[in-house]
Length: 359
Image (cartoon, rainbow, N blue to C red; front, side):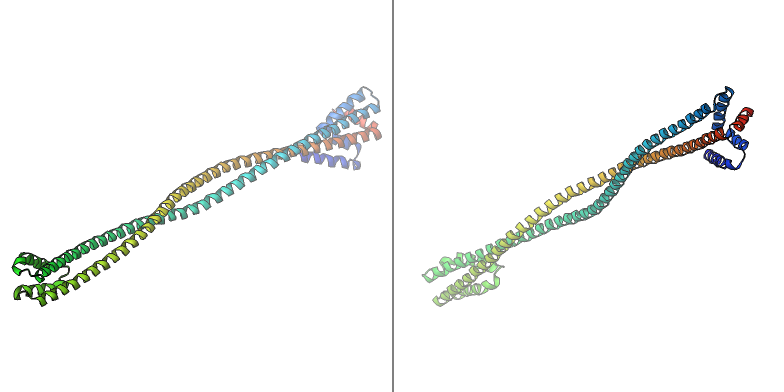
């Protein structure tokens, strides 16, 4: 409203060329500033001050207006420079916090995705460790069973070989002239041992039959030779069987030794991998937590910077409004001074009459 009044006054003064002097002076007198100036001129005229001193008064007033405007221009220029610097710094702060929020948000999201992968990796690794341990236990049990079976079968073969050797000694005694009666006790014991054998019953059957026939039909050299030959063949088969089983045992033992080392190494690798993943997962969780904290921090700082920026901009808008308003006022005041100087110079008597007649 004040600016509108000032602009209206300027228009009125400019249009004064087309209205009479009394109308122009009445318009000036209606303005508070014009009223004050006219009052000062009236005082000079009442004191019969020369016209040139009245002009000097108006010149001084005009110079004061110019000086005030110059001072105001300088102050506003300083305010503008300071405001631009502050706004630039605050805009940098806003941009910095926005970038930090974006960077930490991206870091948080990326790390959450990576954490999901790590947690799946450790789940698989834990399962792999369990599978490895189960495989080791199963294969070790199998190997132990293989070895126990081998030991039992070799012991059975050795028992049969011992029995065959005992039988060979008895046949040799008979071949050297010993009577059947002399060895009958050992013969009966050996015959029972061979007959009771279950591990090689089929292999021993011919020997058992030959010994039974020998005991039934009496000793003869041909029968003894046949039995001795049979015992030798059976013994060779047993020795070969033992060698075969020993070879299998050695190969199985070697395979288990190699496989167990592989399983142990794999177990060590998996356990180390699990430990690494545990550390990695904890680091990722810490990173996510830190990112959340930084996002919260920079969000608060961003709000603070934006509020300060808005406050600074609002303050400068007010200062700009004040500057524009006061500049317009001074322009209007200068127009009043210029018009009065014109009337004083050109229409002094009319002006004096108006001033004298005003309240």
